[in-house]
Image 1 (tube, rainbow, N blue to C red):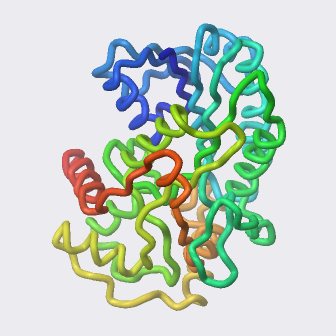
Image 2: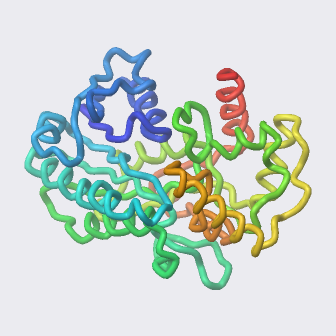
Length: 325
């Protein structure tokens, strides 16, 4: 199969590129300024295609002769001042890529979304694909723009190209070169996990999500979306599990809500004044207080998706960060 991956220089996209190459697929990846993806260093069959989601001609070059597209590229930010740029890349860029893919007769378009486009169940149950998005009042630019792109793709479904959406949970694992979601484990390794947020999340190994995305390309129903989540844990329980595996102190307590919100606002404002990317924003803090718990039953039933024990993904992450030291 001839496959295009966007976002291969990132955490999920890099792991997906490796898995696709190991399976014998011919992989092309889109990269701004022709930057080589670290994931491709040991895979000479992975071809870099210089391009940008804003450059239609480069997208035409990238999509030529492609059977499947895995679209994972996006700007990830919870800072409101980034919203305009995120709208241009995450939403309009997705639209451009889709239109070019359709014209190039690409067979399947797999959109890598997020569980944050689904929302949480108001009754405290595990959310599923039918749970209504209820994060709009929080005005988080990442979840809002990913939701807009997802809505466009689902609404545009036609016979020319088959669209499948996957919604990953909180991914952890090795090769997190940009320090995205796995950064939380690195912080615990450096004794910064003594106080846990009050909420919870659905933690999942990135390899499980990559396998699930490939299964969605192979067996997913066109026009459907599939949650690829994992172990629903409070942050305190997750921090404790990580602490056990890297021999660090368990969290002393859950940080009170008012402290979480106030401290994050101070950090965000100070960082923006210094023109630096905030380590945490108030939007991040608000999300960390919520129970982000999800069911992957649909993916397990229709795709054969399997959730493995979290321990191996945590160990992969610990090994990855330890080797950098």
